[in-house]
Image (cartoon, rainbow, N blue to C red; front, top):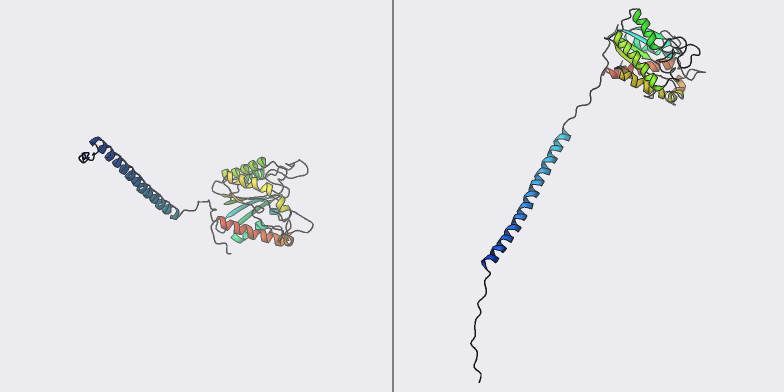
Length: 279
């Protein structure tokens, strides 16, 4: 009979100290990473919230409108010099002296008017037969300003109107001529405002002369003048032109057209003076 072997109880082997230290280190590292990402998330959320609040405050703040120069108001009795072409001369009006758009505009404000309107002239064209783009009469606006300066004119406002006869001028040349005329007026009369009114015509010619209006507008602004551009502002449309068109003429308006033009000029001046446009 075999003898039974005694039961031997094995002791469980405990992890060594070095192994336990490694486990603790791993656990601590994991906790550190979790806490780090948590902190970053909270911090980033706070930053995003702060940026959103700042953006909301910025966009909700009132923004001041850009400033723009305004024409000085001219009281009744102010002296105004108009230099222009056949439109200022009064072609198409029943009374070309007192019924043209320039006279009607000055009378509306009670101004003391001097109107120098000569057909066939412009900023670059001096009028007269032939002479290509310039003409032969040497009556460009800059030269006619010399006449009024020599005569001792002392206006409060100078109005330079035209461009219809500058159709053969290179845009750069036209722009420079406008600037030269404005600068001459401002040098001679530093206390006067200068207003440049570009070409006007009923349709379909109005659409064709827009190419002259833009260099005139830019030249005026370059020299610090105020600008009104009828064709760029669509004063004459295919709908209203027939009632204003001078019979047998595609470039000028009739008596009613001069009245309409004056009303639009008055409105435009008051807009630039920030005044109520009511009479």
